Image (cartoon, rainbow, N blue to C red; front, side, top):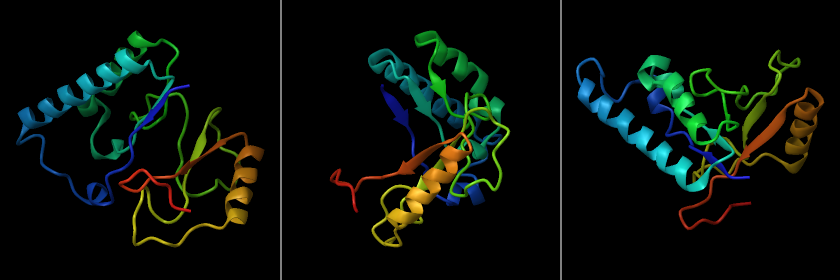
Length: 162
């Protein structure tokens, strides 16, 4: 199975926009074309089974061209699996960090979970979850019909810490 995922950039984009696309529409269109070309290249060369998006909160489904993106990806592989972070145009839900108190209504879902308090490698974050906490979380998730995705962001040299 080939899986491709894009990790989050950071909290700053949740608080403010990088630029106003109504004032710089060409800049946004250039970016949309760029990421569409990147997805096409990945799809043609690697035929991924799954693509996980992140960061859809910054713009609307229309701005991201989410429906067209999904249609385009399915041209390359009709049964590709896409997470819900393509502005809800995906195949499964992706809550983050918190184990649901009760089972979700979604038929398919996975909890996105970090091994510490940060997504990706952050040298200052050494507050790692214990093995017991991770196994307990896995047990809780599986008992409610979900999957557990643990973020193991590597250091710049590719090494995985702890």
